[in-house]
Image (tube, rainbow over all chains, first blue to last red):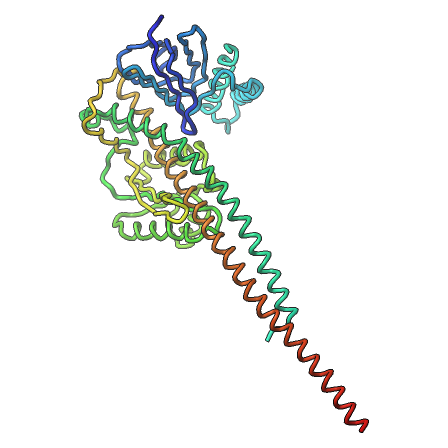
Length: 136
Length: 294
């Protein structure tokens, strides 16, 4: 059996998720995708808006939509600091779809008062959420 | 002396006021409990992000080599203009909560020798500083008693933008620390430029790998850290406001009850006096009739 480690996702509002039988975390940092297993070197990674995948000792999997933040791995304990994070089971697909359409409309409209960067961010968030919801 | 009817009317209105203040007290108490829970729930994130920040800048040489462009929030400049971010309530009826925070802010501002600009949170703070002719750069309001993290992001990003554009060279925050429902202390802290917290002594830390490098991590981390600092202050202030409101409304309810009691006494006296007078008149009238018949 693979070695397990302790894993936590913390958001400003609450401790979103914690488990101590995680064997693998897959995520995307600002420079690219990476994955860590137990006994990884101490690392601090800056996260991109992307799905985060967990694998547990019993073979089950879980994903989260993480919208930016940090991952810290240190001595058998992995902590994710996310400004916004949703578990795959908590995602409201209808809302994410609506957000995606709204963002796409904004980007397509090309009006002067559209905040392009903001619409892009919203679109990326919505797509990540939908991806994660699809995995559940 | 007021007539019995007038006193009765007064009694009724005081009683109604008492009912309202009692309801407000209960609302504040319920909200206070939630605010305290929220404050407790936000603590792990704040502690962790502080820890990460101190790990990133564990080597002081990193700080010395930062470029001002990449890390505007960590940039130390000669202080010519000081910004004050003042947190007070949106609504009144919270005892001395707002006025204590504002008093503290005014004391700090008048002690400050540099040029001062103000950013306010809460309508009371905005009204106060605008009326007194301070240079108010921005006012945020509408969330003083239930701040969400998004509100903190809004306030922090606005402050960061102004700081980067040299709207001020240092930012201090005036907020109220919640100790208990009876005791809240206004305080003033410097929040910009970001001062990475000193590492706790005696803790042997492993040296970290950074993905991407320290510089990039820091440029994302610094604004996030500012957000958490602002959020913590907002949450503390909200709890203080609600605690203060609860205490104020509780004593208002007690006072109303006492007032009703006193009024009841004078009402009874007035009522008895009018009955006695009527009796006197009747008896007097009967006596007069008797004498006339004789």
